[in-house]
Length: 229
Image (cartoon, one colour):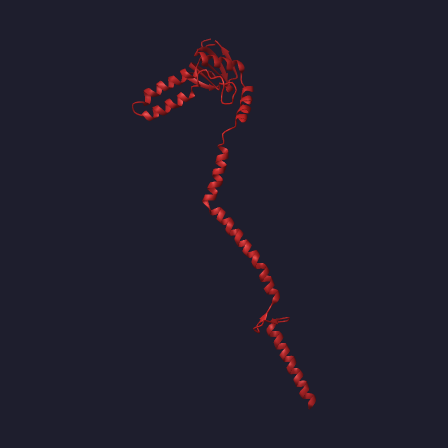
């Protein structure tokens, strides 16, 4: 009978152990308050928390940069300022040397003579397959023609337009006797002006009172040629 009693006690102990294992899990521990805990889970949560915070801070700062119009405007203004920077004197000299090397020196000489002495010279220009006949004149005469024309057209009814056009054509006139340009080198004439112009292209003929064109676009020229010939 004693053996049966001892066997019953052993079975009761085993039952209690199994219940404890089922409640707390294998390897489970109790905290000081008697509650079960998992040390590995707590450590993983603790380690993952800083990373999550860093991710949230990064997202917040990135969104703030994208949503801040002041920051975007500041970045845009810095790009605009750099794009609108005036060229330095050395950069202007390099541009002058490049442009001067592409010029027709003889045509530059004739243009300088006309500008400085206010002469009129019969000339034919060849540009992009067109023949342009007329009298080469100074910029002053070309500008004065259109100033007078716009005064007649706009002064009475549109005085502001007349003033704006006057300012525009006046600004085209180079300073008298200017030998040195902003580059610190001799002035290059970039435009040629003619009056009583006849333009021939593919058998068609057009006549205009005044004409202005780029000297760098002239392929060839003949002094003294006229359209009648």
